[in-house]
Image (tube, rainbow, N blue to C red; front, side, top):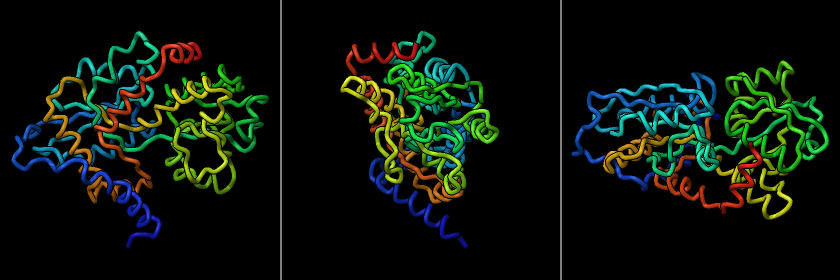
Length: 342
């Protein structure tokens, strides 16, 4: 018998996915079985077991095969390195452009392109975005013994922050320089799992994670007041975090708020799948339809509930629009934002 908690989670996941039902029709039963005998490879920009990128990629990999014509085998290939650039370059330049390879890239990859990082050899606006599993309203949380108990304290007191990914490093560096927050960044940990252990050991004082993930996997920390949630990084505030400011709320004028908004945009991308450019339109449609069908599949919903996930799915076409609009900032704002991270 399912527990009340698991039943509730399944109900919430189902409700979150219901709106997707009419977005895509199911794949045409008469469609060519392109994937029969083939393998769908999912490239992930982080290491095995490192974080939610890997966990969510493997969750979808377990269920998407039967929803593609021909029921292909599905494998996950981890490709960490260069703050997500290695995986992005592989997907854009070397992966076959036939629908047999997709990827879950670092959510800040658009910023890497926006700021013209020379190592990136990809254009995210030309990729074919398949769909989002969860948005990432991440939170910065500090250990209860830290001098910083709320974000306002960080203007005067130092906070040692574990920074495990590209998005975090960009975000915290920007906040230090734009607002003068006394954040001391510690890098080198492989993922948020290692960061959580480092917090318990007293090696660092703060870490950021998606709120929907953290509130589940460390519910005991919240219950026992071992941490204080001091900041939300997304533009859409979590309803269960009243009084915790968003990054954009820290802006002291219109220009600062625009810059803070720019650095909050990756949270909308969150944990999303994309495919290389140049795919046939029919193949893009198949991938998007399969993704949507996967997230509605009863076995997937139950699997997500066992992982205690609250999903916030978004269809590929809407995600594509978000990606394109993420570049709609004035050259002056982009230049000022870029100067803050170099």
